[in-house]
Image 1 (cartoon, rainbow, N blue to C red):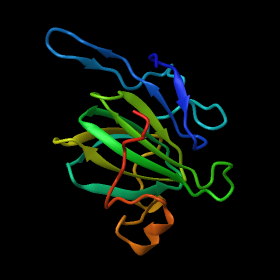
Image 2 (cartoon, rainbow, N blue to C red; image 1 turned 90 degrees about the vertical axis):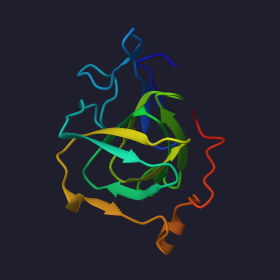
Image 3 (cartoon, rainbow, N blue to C red; image 1 turned 180 degrees about the vertical axis):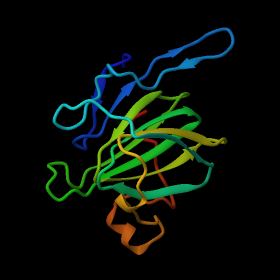
Image 4 (cartoon, rainbow, N blue to C red; image 1 turned 120 degrees about the vertical axis):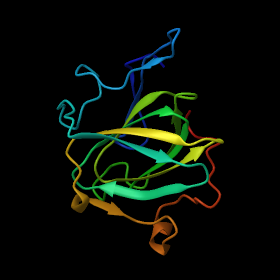
Length: 173
């Protein structure tokens, strides 16, 4: 992959692009967002930033499942390694039923991952240390527009992924 090249996945609208890292004598500079990034929203609109926040994931912990009704996520993992699973349950989507597993993070694949509204996602830290997610969303946080489903909930069985024995061995990384 080359910096700035956008890669599609099996889920329509879920894309990622490699980000630039510049090694310097005092430590690396990690890029994340610029107005001219080639990742666009459906309809060709450029991304708007409503809020940027960080989420830490500890090894052995699962944060799943969540989806948004109005918000588009833009994940970057500058520290640690993240195993992330995405599932398309949008009824009118041509990729309905598709499941994508990715391994991302500075040590493996330093990318910007776009997760459009309506996609279920969950993640865990891989390895011995925590993973830190930087998330740039297109609207300010609104707790009423997100939907959660605990991965241990019986209803979560509709998503074909087992967090009790997660397998990221064949995941794109």
